[in-house]
Length: 185
Image (cartoon, rainbow, N blue to C red; front, side, top):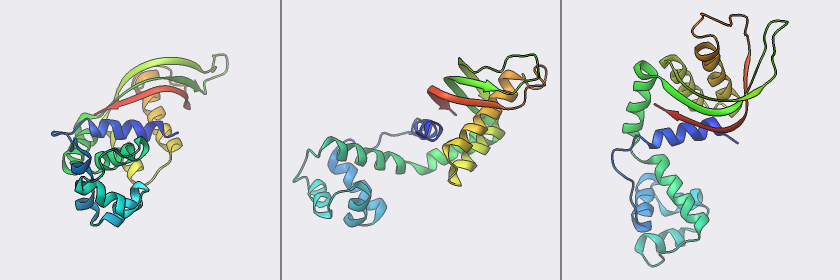
């Protein structure tokens, strides 16, 4: 699963200043305007172009739940790109990102200390450079392991090492077995 990428997408959608269209007809019409044709929307949603045209005309109002969910996800992924970009830019330059998670943390530590992983519930505000690295990596197509590594490094630096004032021998922090993870920026 892509926990970090999904959390970034959810946080992105919290930036909406207006709600996306509520009706099926409005959502499908929006997608056709964005993608250019019913055929392109149909290819993305996984239905026929005739079905898209029926939804758009209002001749068919109740698609199967899986199709309705895919239409909703496609609309939300494209809704208000300028607002979301502005919010990401602010997080990457001045605001940073807040990570709230319950996950198993393991780490590499000096001899004589414990490095057994254990579940922790953390809420930590990471500085803007971590937000910038997360957005840049996601936009470059990074996998969830790379995004986890960036979050784990930020948690190591800010939470475990407290900005360089303690646990300086702690090197690699691993973020595994994520129970939940939410990001806010």
